[in-house]
Image (cartoon, rainbow over the protein chains, first blue to last red):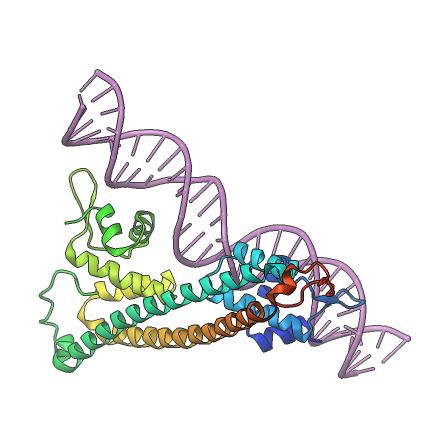
Length: 138
Length: 138
DNA sequence: ATATTTCTTGAGAGTTACTCTAAGTCAAGA
DNA sequence: TCTTGACTTAGAGTAACTCTCAAGAAATAT
């Protein structure tokens, strides 16, 4: 059994967020001790893992709650859950593509600046080089 | 020259967001026509591109504004900008890694569910199979 | 045995970055 | 002329945290 602090450390999710997620109904099986303190089981950690995963790929909390509810409903919802996981995976693959595109933009920018620095950095130090009226280069 | 609507379409950013970004000072060189309507130049599109890129990898708007201000300040800030781009690239690479990890989680889940479906889906239709007290499987 | 520190709790305020709505201006088309 | 449609601003609403706070229990220090 783990306290919320331990879960936060193990799963790399803040305590605040874990409480927020708990209040959102994402961890329906977490027990409390006699002092009302949450006791996460190893199985509960799996729920944290999947919620973290769904959030990380941009699934809205409303949709996560629906998935959780399907889990709670039991075996009859396995095909629905399978479909959700597949769709989520596809979404994640698209994000991968998008991220690669943005990395290309950053690579281009990096080369652009490196080139500037390598070839005419001396201009920077030259006060006579104030010919442009406002920088136009992003 | 492009209207905000055209820019929205070309760059795949909503008009609302473009106005929000404009108000945030991200496009300091966009001109207005006699009716106060924004006229984006091709060069302005490059500003949209870099802002979109920085946002896509999680850069805060405050930090984007700082970068924009460095651009406006001119050549003397090229090294600072180079550094920001490098750091941003590193951040994006980390996100890539994280996304891959989450894809592994989704792959595992997908296989898990496929296996369930392939091997004992018939249980789902069997009303006698209500042995578990609440689903524990995420 | 008491004092202090450390944890946890829930409630609720604050933040970021949109996202949407409303009310208004202006110009071109039926 | 009327209306349609693109544009404007201000400001309200939203999602998902993120943070602050006061209260209460337990562990540690004196």
